Image (cartoon, rainbow, N blue to C red; front, side):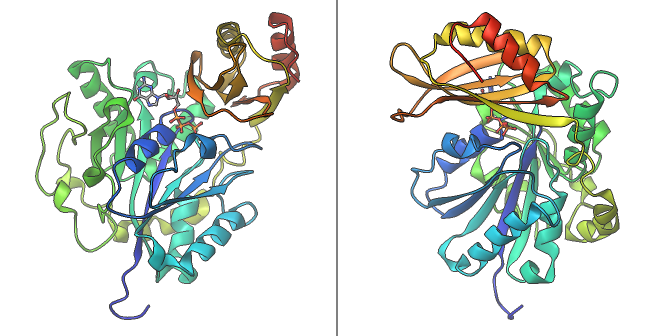
Length: 363
Ligand SMILES: Nc1nc2c(ncn2[C@@H]2O[C@H](COP(=O)(O)OP(=O)(O)OP(=O)(O)O)[C@@H](O)[C@H]2O)c(=O)[nH]1
């Protein structure tokens, strides 16, 4: 490294399928007019849905879509290293790199890549955030007894996070928030800060430039801030006593990082497939059908775009059986497409269920 050479900060945003990573990033991008950002998005599955969902019309945002697998060492991971290499050669053109990992990835692959001699002189991990679907956490959806595969991924993501972001908390009361905090603390004592995100909104001050892996702690986190629902985002407590999770701590992790390997990423039980239809859809009927599919089959996430009978195009999102649609930009000739993600899900059975419930053909 050249003396005085400033490293470009990198923030990793991780979190289980559907926890709100893309929504949180979109909200961040709308607030970051004072800096230019390079955003890298990685998805589990054959097709990228997150990239079109990210609003990159904001000035000063460039998007890089590393799709077709998970960020991992070697193999698929090369795509990430390639992207980072391309950014490295012109890193003076942006201020910060934001990486959204897939909902089934842990941040270790990215952390290790950043630590390699090729990148360590130019990029510095700023912080790793894990976005938590708080209602699902409180429902016990990440308990080993309830769903071992989901619990494994969830705990591995928490293990390497600096900041846990409790999301989807709009309708939760203080007792529930404290219960969620206690659960996260219990599972991940090394998490340094807990922040509350109302409607997937976090103040950039509490998100970017935290320098949790550098020599200096962020001023934003120096003083305790009491958490009052209604604030945009605040740490529930100041966790200075847990100061061990610094850059040095990553070093301490390294032996476990390399042995940890991304066991769940290679767990063939996690599967995804894409179904398409050429016909316009009765959107409410499709919503009900997707909801039933998610109740009957082990489908944890559905996302995609559909064309409604009213001529509109919609983004369809399901996290387990909670399904919603939002208007999406029109795209002439674009098909209806839905990505289904789950543990040991059967493409055949899901397709049959759609065929049975809907007059439109899905395949
Ligand atoms: N009620 C509520 N819904 C939210 C919140 N944040 C996200 N959502 C919804 O949750 C769904 C999933 O949000 P995304 O931001 O796409 O989640 P993600 O983590 O990027 O999903 P994957 O990349 O598939 O893992 C969408 O329907 C969002 O509108 C929130 O704070 N409150």
